[in-house]
Image (tube, rainbow, N blue to C red; front, side):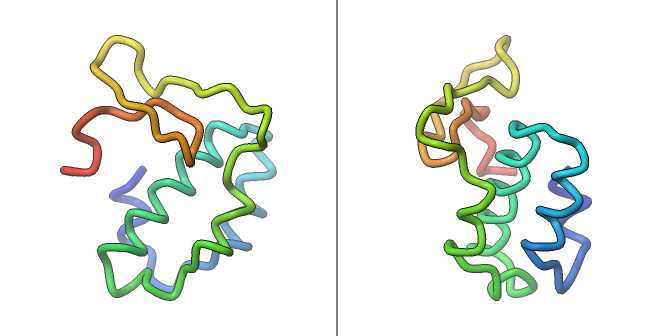
Length: 91
């Protein structure tokens, strides 16, 4: 997924939210928000994305963290509410 998002220039968080809402899958929203945040911190094509915009994709206070893959070493991405692969940021 991150490679697909990395190729989209001029992406807007409200547009992404609209598309994601059709899937009715909060975990997918969290993963997309997390990847968009990584891209906004490391790519000039995404530096227009602000933390305030990403807030709509973050988990609610009562959200229980979920695993991306239970069979690999993981670490908690508390802000995003899921257990990410330990070396995910290295990709």
